[in-house]
Every structure is written in C-alpha cells, then in structure tokens.
Image (spheres, rainbow, N blue to C red):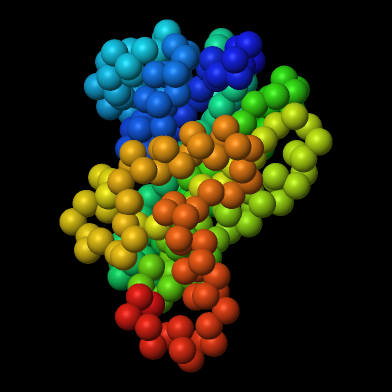
Length: 254
C-alpha cells in the first residue's frame, strides 16, 4: 500500500526489459525506495536493470520468469508472485512486439506472434492480476498502448490492430473497476526511440522513453485514465480518426 505521503512502495513490471518501463520505475524509486519485481522471459537479461534500480534508490529488486505467450502459466505466475511479494501499488504492463508487417502479411505464424503477444498474452495475464488487485482493494494498473491502435494504418496494421484490441479491452476494464479502488491508466505514445524501434525512421512528434516515463508518473499523480505522449497526439489523432477513408489512405503516414 502507498505510504503516508502517497508514494508507491511496490511495483510489478510485466516486460522487465522495456526501456519505457525502466525509465518509469527509475522515477518512482527515486521518489521513494520502492520494492520492484521485473518479470521477463529471460530474467537474466534484467541484471543490468536490477543494478541500475538499486543505485537509483530501490529498496529491493527481483527478476522473475514470465512468458507472455505461455498462457497456461499466467495464473500460477500471478499467484506465486503476489503470494511471495505481497500487494503491489503498481502493475505496469509493458511487454509487446512490433513484428515485421511484410512477413506477417504472408506468414500466419508471424502474424500470430504479434497478436498473441500484444493482445492475447496481455488479456491472459491481466485477468489474474485484476483478481488480485480487486482482492487487495487498491493499486494502479497501467497499460503501455500506442497511437497505432487509434486508427490502424496500412503500413503496420497487424501491430496496430493488436494495439487497438488491447486498448479497447483496457477501456472496458477501467469501467469495470471504477468502484473497486483499482485505478486503470492507458498510455498512448507515438513513436518512441527504444530498442524496439531502433533502425526505423522516426515519425513526427517522436519522443524518448524518459518523456513517456514523465508522462506516466504525472498521469498517475493526477489520476488520469488516458495519457497521450506527447500531449499533442490527442489532437492529431482526433483529426486522423475522423478523416474519410479515401483521404486517410492518401496520407504519407498510412
């Protein structure tokens, strides 16, 4: 449970190697020496992040194994993690894959990898996480979504559709949890300079993981339901969302 000053004391990161998630947690532990659990498919890949977070002020940092597409393991993983570590003030859902659009259009396995990781895997682990958050009666659940799901583009429609699906799921989840004491926040960044986008041409209004992290921490403090990064993306997408299909398809971004 948060301390007397309202600072978070415990954080679970699903996607423990995420650049955005780690930037966010660094800010949290700098404010209060929180306990952090990093969940990743290869926990050993989190060793550098563990050391960095301890240096930043974390009281404890642990890495645990978590596979987004091993759906059968999710309920047991959540049960074991909460039983061992106790309540969490924040669960940050930060895993995902961009994939290769050209390959995904031809190869069913490639398309399924994107959809099963970004949508099915997220739903699968979210259900038992929410059960535990409901039981504890407090906490925040944050999804790193994307503006790619706001209006799916031809250039990355497999990734975009997976993000559209999980964004919609979390909107409904937020309504379901409105009176539970659990706060749901959806974060919709545009292009972010991370490992996942390395080598890609940056889009307009691109941001860094640190900028997204600042927005996440600010959004949590203000109790926001949806956070756009940068804020101007809210207005850009409001326009794009309502363009006629014939016009939208002629845009260079599509």
